[in-house]
Length: 373
Image (cartoon, rainbow, N blue to C red):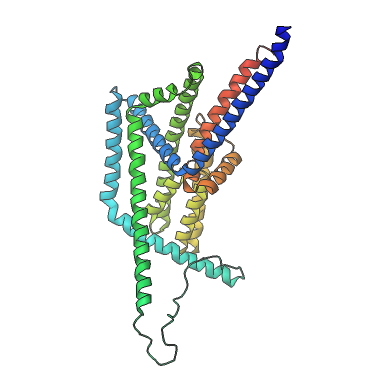
């Protein structure tokens, strides 16, 4: 009798415990999502530092196949080589790069104005383009013909103008400091992760419960290997896109070919969307040299896209990632709309991590169902 009387009580206790644990889990997961949403920029910044660390470690491992040196020395050699390469580019062509960048900016602005005028002539509404408007007459200016309008501005106009100048200067300074600060944060995190990868790996695994530490080790190692292979393939692809774009545009005779090659190589880090943006910039910059040059640049861009999508990516990333293009593009759009440029740039490595997790759990389910079959 006692056993039968205790059974419903224990059942109710187990049900209450399960409901409590489930409720706590749901609340904890919701808090985690809210934390990730509000601090997404910081989390993306940290993730960018981790990616830089993985890239430096991958380059150091490749160097280790050539020279048998300690990891710290190989990492130092990689960092010195990269710093020397960047310094050489800046010192050798810094002035040229700055001039080409300024000329390219003006060219693209003028071509946008020309495109807007062309669309207007063909009856297409372009009112949503804010390409500048003619200067308006100040309220205190004389509108009578023949009367000079060079009147002194009022104190209120001077005050508002000074406030606008101070506000824009402050925004420029804050934006510059923020960009430089983010760069050094990513650089510091990348160097720290690459210098002692084992320490951070053990610390990450220590956070997992002891009974789940074995599967967690497999997942972490697979994520690291996948990101290493993908980053190496991506670096090779970006370098190839830069060189082909630079040489091709220089042969066509497009001004600013070097800068256009740099932007095309950097945007190659963002699959699909980056190639589209780079192609639009190349075509816009080529319009100033005539329709033949623009058509040649478009053909060059299509050839580079074919080279990247159908030759380099399948060859280099065959062992790294196999993600359907539609899935990747949808994930890019989702993260880009939600988190801006950070989400757009880091969508592929994030979906690569998700794919590793899904493959691991699917393999575990298949292994568990194998004896039953």
